[in-house]
Length: 207
Image (cartoon, rainbow, N blue to C red; front, side):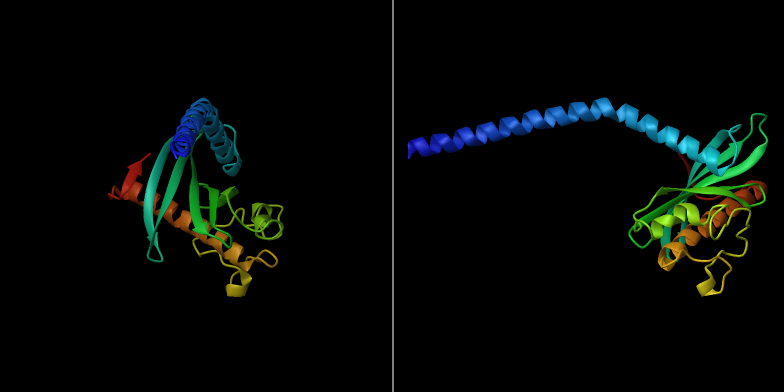
């Protein structure tokens, strides 16, 4: 019986030792890769902002995190205010997230000062490959249902809902979610501009 107890103790000690060593290794690897991953994410966002604003000659003058309520649900938006080298306002690139068919659908969309859509890119999605994932190109300037140049002062909707935007084939849910993300980003952008002009206070937290 003592031999059995000794064996169990040894096994526990070995398992604990292995867990500690593996934990240490994982922590070390995480520490080493954390910096490069963060830099890569920042570069991807920077490149995305330039792409949706259709300009390489720009700088981000502010990054505002804004909470707004849509359909009784609090949504978080990140507004990247953009200006050119001389300080002239070019508009803003806005991160907007809605629930798609497979999960969160996160869009980065660029607006000029008048609220017209300059460009967009998908930052994150879990849509079906070959179907909902087509949102990355379907609504682009050379896509099947371009929204580039449109002003969502009248919310963009798919043709099945009485709008003038053709939904992705067999992916109406994704199309609705995408357009919802665009419409909500537009509303946040216009409200922010309105408050900036009137000096009204809003719930805005600088990131």
